[in-house]
Length: 183
Image (cartoon, rainbow, N blue to C red; front, side, top):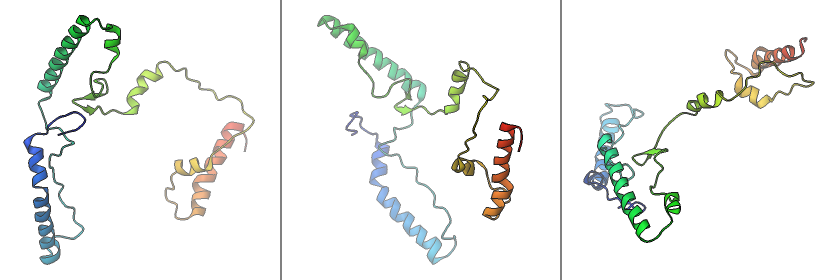
């Protein structure tokens, strides 16, 4: 039983916990036999990952059915709470301020967080930003050496001297000449 949500896991998760030790012993014996005794496999060869259902992983369900069930239970819960709030003289504004789910539906689906990329937000953000194409006139150029070292890749350089003469210093000279107009 999950202490936070009071969910009881299905039989598959319980079976996987009960047979985990037995499976581990079998795999250990197979590892010894194949790699150390028979030498049929290289000792560094990858070991197959077990796909046991654990307590932290909810069982795979039909998404359309589970979503429908979730909406149905939410509707039932809201209606019962709404009627209880009205009959007991509760404040409806206060009622709708409260959180009714463990995970917000806008951030999660079936109890799991939605995945996305930060770059998905660019369309929203770039529409409201004004682009400046001309650099402002400046009296100084500040270059962060640590950032430059991480930014400039040492392609075809074998020593630090090669990196400095072929990559690092030409970048600094180029950035200085584009800002001032002369070297």
